[in-house]
Image (cartoon, rainbow, N blue to C red; front, side, top):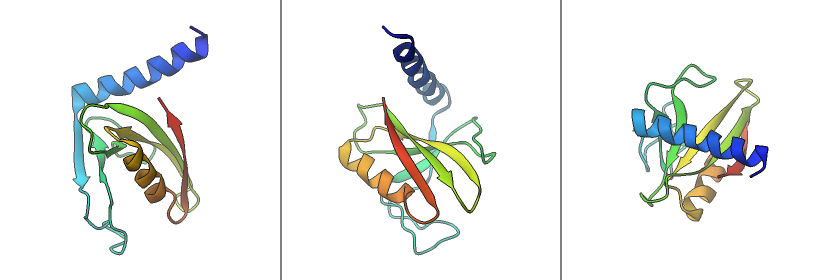
Length: 118
């Protein structure tokens, strides 16, 4: 295995461990409105990994999909021109349709993101 492959494997295993040990809290369920932008409705469950901290000082963000057998399938790396920050958003139990939905949600407004698959 190449060194980069080992690093990628370890990267995603570390996130799996964080989720296994700390769980994901869904604070914005599918169908709910964004707290600051009420016209923005979440098309997929969205929350954070408990007991973690991201760039914004909150928990590491996570989209949680419908297929409870998949685990982490990738991350979305984001940059926001208004907040002037960047973050990662975990894609957990997300089948292809969930991934497309999460990317659409992330690339809405001043934020943009790219997909990094596991």
